[in-house]
Image (cartoon, rainbow, N blue to C red):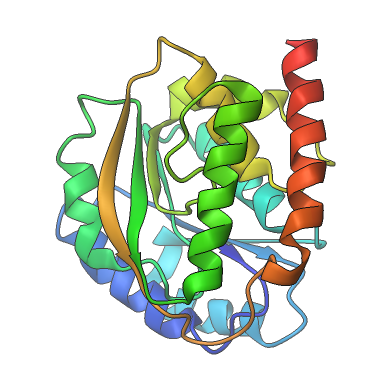
Length: 229
């Protein structure tokens, strides 16, 4: 779970997700990556660790953006020997009620994405996801149903090599990973319909107003990445 200035939502998100995951397995680590938060997020995580103990692992770093925080979490999962890595965001939009739909088919697929077929966070965010999907299809000839979705369950060994290919300067690193995985025909994908809630608080990591600029930057970064092989 990447975290950046989410003090309004952290307690509720961590508590509800601990409750949900414990319904299906006790063998898990909840890894929170604090991306240089300027509010009380890190302190709140520390207090939550007093409640949940060593299963809540907190990693703090200087700010490098949401996508790169996700990649760092994937790498740390690999170092910890995790068989699977599941990502959520810390703003409360990821609803735990859909988790079992991904978990129950984990043995059949290496990568399982939630696809946001219902969104409560506004038409503009829906349009952003649609534009990104079309751009990836036209530019890279692969289908990524929801390339930047945080709700994804992945077999660690299947994705860690692709994670290593993504350089630190790529901003939409999570979407870049989705493109690389889609290009690999040996990786079996599944897509599960989910609903996306409104944020509990805070601001989106990528404001809709700057998305066009970030999309152009993303295209150039992934094009160069694929050219290098």
